Image (cartoon, rainbow, N blue to C red):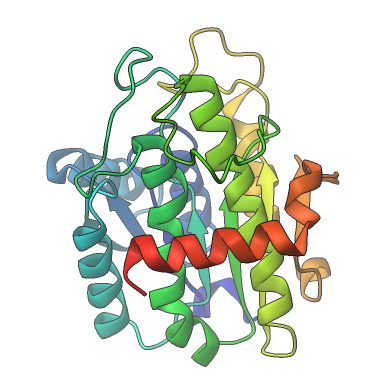
Length: 271
């Protein structure tokens, strides 16, 4: 990898929790950080906070609501037009099992189950659209912030219309991220672009967690490692529990299931 001072890194969901702390950490290391969120006021507050800690931080703000595939496309277009090379994409943005909505089933702007849309489909589309600038900057990395909380995808009811559970919705969206990671690793082999996913830490103190069990710095360290550690230059298609390699749910390694998910994802995102 290039020195951090020469790298450009996009962090989605960077105005709160893990994403906010991660953006600050990467800026402190010297990278140019593209800060994404869905609220301009929170975005400016995040950048002011980072600059108070890192006065010479190189930051760029991008607003997009990832519950809208149209806004995901706009985000990708803006990043690609303003940064001809993108060294790392960290798909961190996500929503939990009960926040928002209190456990009730919700839909995105495009009519898809909200957790599947925000946690998975948005990152799928954003990654696909940014692959040209990631490839042009190779060696580069794609990092998916997933979870140990995973559930198999029922392809007969992916949107959970028949039987909804916020926990199930969250967990299947997180498995979908890992399935996409494995697919990307195979697809991008030999290009210099790697893809990995991780469970950063258990119950970090974020707005999704009522009773934290880990410190935020643990998740930052684990995620930053996937983005920056030169020892991982050739590592791709892996799932990590913190800093340790770990097995994902069995469906992640099923080529047939991944092919079905890929076809569905292309259809739902209009690729």
